[in-house]
Image 1 (tube, protein in one colour):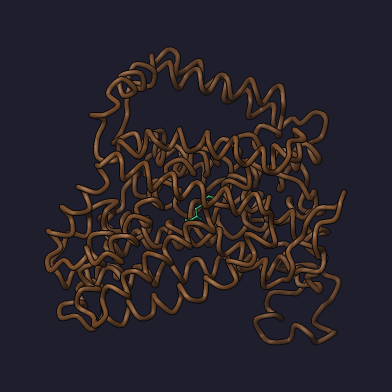
Image 2: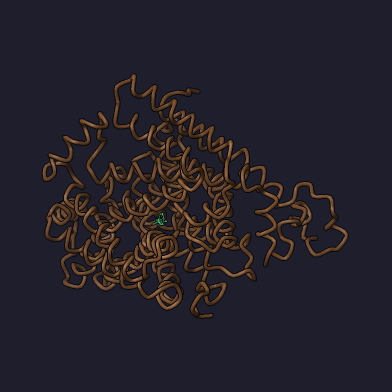
Amino acid sequence: MKASAGTRETWGSSLGFILAAAGSAVGLGNIWKFPYITGLNGGGAFVLVYLLCITIIGLPVMLCELTLGRHTRRNPVGAFKALSPPSSTLAQLIGAILVFAGFILLCLSTWGWAVTMLLLGAAIFRYSWIVVGAMGVVAGFTILSFYSVVAGWTIGYIWKAVAGQLGFTTVAAAASHFVGFITHPGWAIGCHLVFMLLCMVIVVRGVQAGIERWSKILMPVLFILLVVLIIRGLTLPGAMAGVRFFLSPDFSKINADCILQALGHAFFTLSLGMGAIITYGSYVDKKQNIFLATLSIAGLDTLIALMAGLAIFPAVFAQGFEPGAGPGLVFQVLPTVFNQIPLGALWATLFFLLLMVAALTSGISLLEVVTAYFVDERGWSRSRATIVFGAVIFFLGCFSAVSVTGWERIEWLHRIILAVFGTARGSFFDVMDNLSSNWLLPLGGLFISLFVGWVWGPAKAVAEIRHGSHNFADVHLISLLAGLKDDPSHNSDVHVLTLASIWGFFIRFLSPVAVLVAFLYTIGWLQF
Ligand code: PHE
């Protein structure tokens, strides 16, 4: 199915769609970010909180996004525009709460946040739920700007692996090489530029020829390579300490910040909360089972993250390295592991190449959100939207590229941020990451589930989900687990404990409350 004039392009096949959506989900988040934040947050207990967030928040919100996208066949802003009622009490209530919070913050003198809250509240009053879509487009900008910087590092490392420059014998040598590389503005910005150009070329080409074709070939190769790395990591002497760190939970290491990061990461890794999955869902046709698609996408994503952890932590411990080393973890540890395998340079090249590709399939989904908005809502041509906003994101990303380790090169910006917001945790790169992953995405996810659960309504949403799902939604859960799904007498009309009713309960109550509790806990308004 190609796009013909006037109709919207759709995915070529259901496998193609699932791999493309999994391609969006699986990326640097799984292989670069998940291991390093697990390392910073003390290991197993963090992994458990993350898995809990995926199950009770990630899965239900992903189904919301796919449903919204397929039903409206629009970008996130268009989707909310199409379904928002002319006036929504819930939206006004949220607007009022934000304005109220804004005034309180004004009294507490953090005026940057106060103004942000007031503006957001006012925007919700004026535009109702459409603001949620707009927040997604903004998140697309901010995430891709720093994402592309890290993806740029992988491009640099491909080059280094080919040139045979990664033959480190100690992790210390690998670490100092890595820091030298990322703090070199020419390299950092140059590689970031190459990555943005690659994303733009693919997005200009559109859904099938660009995104789908590449995801289908490259995702399976990545999987195989991870298996090889796990085997090598586990067979290094001293590797078991790493497995223990990764898999056995120590709950004394859980604190508020850790929970917020696990929550934020659940959204980040599943590409949720900003409309990427709404946009991908808009290219899905009615024959597809989006219930199963949700399970497969989230399942694949979690599998790859766990595999990445198993590939990295045994190697970290076997080499006496520090698991809390931060964003450089993967880049510092793996080259020394490759160095201990025959044909190491070849493996290293292949690994960074695949990591780059995983990043690319995610990067294009971020850019696609911005592009789809300007194409659908503003009538721009696909190529114009892609080129203009690709360039804007590139420029924004340059600030992250030169400030991963500190603010020295952009001290003026540091001063502005301090003056406006009072604090700036970490570097500019960290600020962008923290703002988008830990706040914008969970907030977006909260609004999306509230919208589907309370405004659009689970009944209409489930009617959409039923297309292509062969009554999946209405199957009695116990019958399903008992293997009696196809037995006619087990599919009665009494809809208790069906997959649909469980989902409805989650998106109306459990997921929003979980996100809210995590937020309130983090800002200190709630204590256990
Ligand atoms: N899920 C991607 C990753 O894990 C990142 C991403 C976030 C992509 C949000 C799209 C939207 O790398």
